Image (tube, rainbow, N blue to C red; front, side):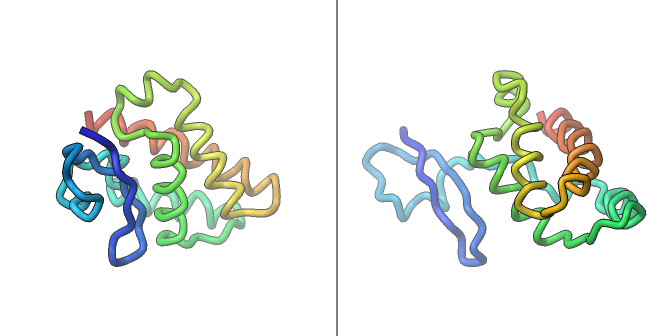
Length: 125
């Protein structure tokens, strides 16, 4: 078995496990190694928190950026998070830097999102 990175038709990056002898094109049918679905986050609370502190709220951009940051760190499950104690914080920090240029806005984003993502992983396990 081997891991294969691939991009779906809507441009979202994924990682899947496929058999050693399968071509990479079979990745979309393999076993997903993606982070939990970020649609499960409390987007209403996130919007209220971010816009209430003067930050722009672009949910699709946040989902894509955060998904890619979590995927890049191999955080597909709660066990992965436990193995990499700083994994979620690092992924959220990376997303913050990609989304916001003002350091204070990055700090607000990090403090708002980090606990939501941690809860999402715990509930998905």
